[in-house]
Amino acid sequence: MAFQKISETEVMSEDGHRIKVGPLALSYIQGSRYLTVPVEHRGQPPEIRVHLAQASRWMEYGQPCDTEGTLSLVWLRVQIGEALKVLGQPFSFD
Image (tube, rainbow, N blue to C red; front, side, top):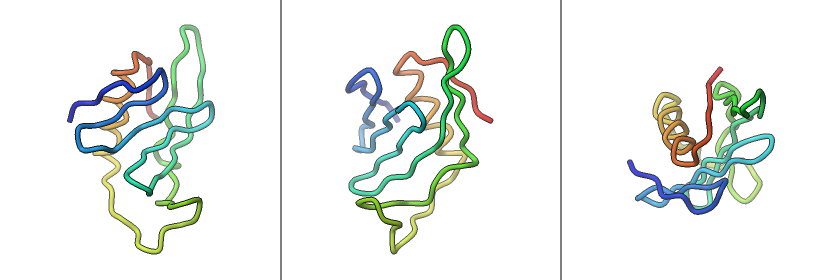
């Protein structure tokens, strides 16, 4: 799935989901639902260390979703990796 760079910290996929990188976490956003994954910015040159095992549960409007969606962590890892490549950001996973 191809991503398009929207800004220096955000990409959007062809089907409309977005990945946005912040100082402490990245967000995987699908419509009004999202989940967050903690990250660390470290090293020289800077690298993002993604803590995928610590991903939050699905949220919607700041509250846990009543209906949990299923999401493969393997698939999410691939999506995050592709998004960070589009952003030109070196990364690694724990």
